[in-house]
Image (cartoon, rainbow, N blue to C red; front, side, top):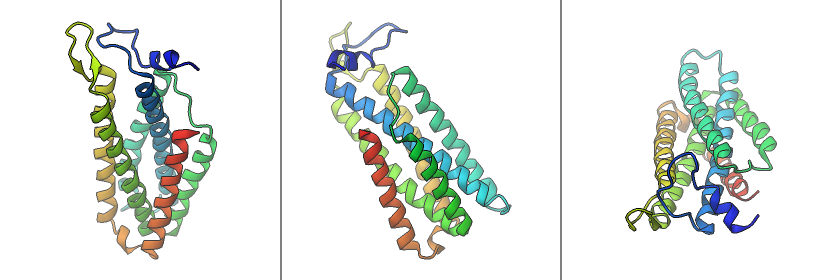
Length: 212
């Protein structure tokens, strides 16, 4: 696929075009953002689905997981829509993400509530940091798009909307992190081994989903 074709994916034809097209590098980065975030939110959705199934007998923690799960469904749906809108192919490893994420959620939930919350803490720590990194790049490298009417250099509507979406989802992921800690994630045994192992798995999944 040539550079012009990639850049045109992020130029809206449904509304009046206000900015010059993104550079090929900018468009390629946005494509990576949408691909990896869709994969990540798919994974989070299925992790909570697995936890909810494993802990459905626990009347105290069940509504806590359900609330977080419902937010992840919204995240996943949003990035599914962005993926279709901009014609971004999903990660080739999507079937693996589905099986692995559900299995991780169910396994930690089956262990006990504390292990499930340690899993949530580990996952949301990595995802929160990942979203922050994306926001830094979008803030530093996407403010030089020329407005066609004024000649000023500002964020395009598409970039602004993506930044706002990521900020909202980042805040909700960090809220899930706080919820996990409040619900005894640090009482999981072995806490350090469990959380560091899961962080490593999630980091590896993020790295791979961006590229494959």
